[in-house]
Image (cartoon, rainbow, N blue to C red; front, side):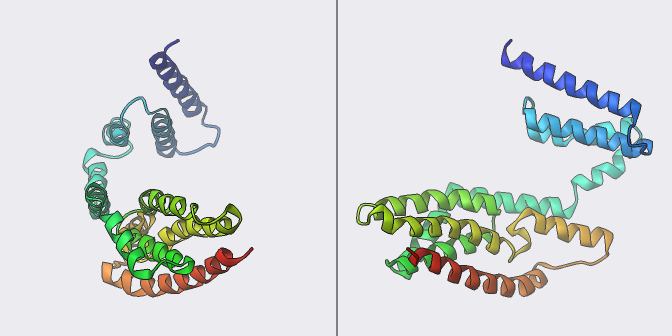
Length: 241
């Protein structure tokens, strides 16, 4: 059986299971809630199988919800034009531009150059670089961008230090990227997708509008404190035997 047939049969099987779930209704849900769950589970299965493009799957509610009388096309289409969606898009465009022109490498290498060449300074340089970049693009993308740079630096250092000396330092460097990307992502609304989702939820359901500056004013100071405490812990890890 070829791959295409496997995908089709898998999708058909999932669809049949969802239909059985729909007609049996084991959770005794209201009909609209049940329909939404079925559509959501079907979309998740299509995203996992990936036999049609993910953006196409994301458009399924646009035509299924009106057909199933879950929501009118006028109401459902408003969500696709929500300001938060365009904020997401702006963040993605910024990330693509940074990656295309290798701006992340220039930022990281310049910061590393200025922070110096000993172990603690290299660790500080990686954390600052990751923190700054993660303020503007997603945490995962920042980590993926910074990891190759860190591995290259560690490879060069391995020529001058033995594994026992470099082991804890290597761990601290890699952890610094993971931690700093999450810490930096807290600083701005576009730093990580959950931030924008939270701002949208507060605006829609709590009638609380949070501006970019308000978010930055409060969370940046918190991020800096979090940054310093994490850096102190990683310093101890880097020098421990």
